[in-house]
Length: 553
Ligand code: F6P
Image (cartoon, rainbow, N blue to C red; front, side, top):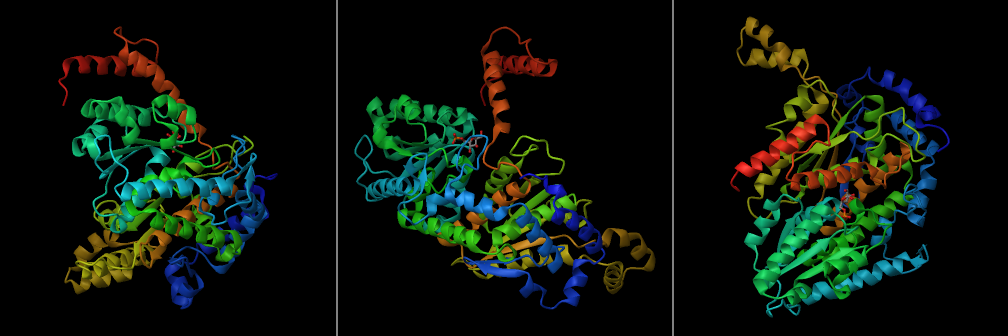
C-alpha cells in the first residue's frame, strides 16, 4: 500500500462519522428501525451471522467497505487465492485455501502444482487412516491401534485439538485422542500413564521439526516406547511425523514411509487442513475430514466472490477494526456457548495475535495506528459468573463474538434452551443497558425505600451500547465447523491487509526462543549465573538452589 491506512479518504471519513454516530445509542437505533435484524444479518454456509448489535448504520458499513476498497482488498484477495508471494518477509505464498480446494490440479507455486500435491497427500492420509481404522495397522507386538497422541504446539496443536474436540460426536468408537503440547513434563507424563505402548500411535506434528517443546515430548515418548516394547524397531510402528522438514524427521528416526509432508506456503496456524490435521482424521475418519475441508472451501468461495458489504469475513474484520481504531477498544472477547467449542478462543487467539500482533507494516515502516487487540475468552456461560461483570459495567468497551449452536444433544435436550437463553440475554443486556428510570422502577417494585434506591442507583446502572456479534450455527457438523474456522482465517487476513501488515510471519516469537537456549545452558551449569541482568541472574540462581533442595512432586 502506498498510503498509510490513516490517510485514506475512508479512514478520515470514518473518524468524523464516529463522532456523529456516538450520539445515538444502539437501543435507540433498534427502536427506530424494526428491520435492523434483517438489515444487518445474513446466513452463510450454515451460519447465521447477526451483526445488528454493533454501533453501526448503513453509512458506517458503506465507509468500512470503502476502506476495504481503498486498501486494494480485491487485488489482495486475488493474490491470496492465486498463490502470490504475499508473505513478503519470508518470500512465500500463503496458500491454505489450496488445502481445501476440490480442484485437483493447476496452481503452480515454485515449480510445484500445489493442488496436485495437496490431493496426493490427502490420498496418502486416506490410505493410512483407513489402515488404522480397519485394524490392519498393527503395533510392534501385533495389536491394532486404540490411542492416538498428537504431539505438537501452537498451530500444530490448537487447530487439531479444537476440531477433534468439537467433532467428538463423530469420533470413531474406541479411538481415544490425547495431546502433548507444553514442555512441562507433567503433560507427556500424564499421557504416558494413560496409554498402552502396544496400542498407541504417536503423531508428531511440527512444520519446522525444530520446535523444542515438540521434540522434547517426542523424545520422551520414544524413550518410553522403546523401553516398554524392548526394541528400537517399535518406533516404525508407533510413530508418524507431519512436517515440511524431511531431513529432520529422518534424523529423529522416523522413516520416510511414515512421514506426511506439507509445504512452506502453509503457515502453522493455518495448517489444520493439511496432514497436520491427521489426528482429526484418525478421530473422525477421512470422510468427515473431507467434509470439514468442503465447509472451509464453501466459505473460501463466499469470501472470494461476495461484495464486501455482504461478505461475512470482511464484515467481521471491518467491524473489529471499527472498534480497535475508532473506539480505542483494546481487547476482543470470543465467547462460545457450546462445550465442544471450549478451545475456540485459544485457536482464534493464536490466529489473530500471531498474525496481526505487529507494529510495523509489511514494508517495515512503524505504524501510527493500533493493530491487533488482545483476543481472549472462554465458555460464555461460565464467563457470566466470572468476568462478564466487567463486560457489562467496566470502564472498557470490549466487542464480543458470541458463538452458539442451535441443535441440542440427545440427552437433557431441554437444557439447550436454557443455554441459548443465557447467550441471547447477555447480548441483549450488553446492547440495551439499563437506564436510571428502569433501574429505579425495578427497585421500587421490589419495595426498596427512596433512600435505599438513591444509594443503590449508581451500582444498578448499565451503560449498554456494548457491541457484539452472534455466530449461530444450525448444527456443529464438520462442514459448518470448517466454514466457521475459515471465516476467522479470512477475517484475520482482511484485518492484516487493512492495517497494511504481513499476517503470515511471526518473527516476534523468535527472540524468546534464542534466549531460552542460553538460559538452558546456565541452568545446567554448576556455577552461579552472572551473565544476565540481575533479575534473570537472581532467578536462575534461586531456581538452582530450590531445585537442589526440593524433592520431585
Ligand atoms: O513459535 C511459534 C510457532 O512457530 C508457531 O507459529 C507454530 O504454530 C508453532 O510454533 C509450532 O511450530 P512447528 O509446527 O514448526 O513445531
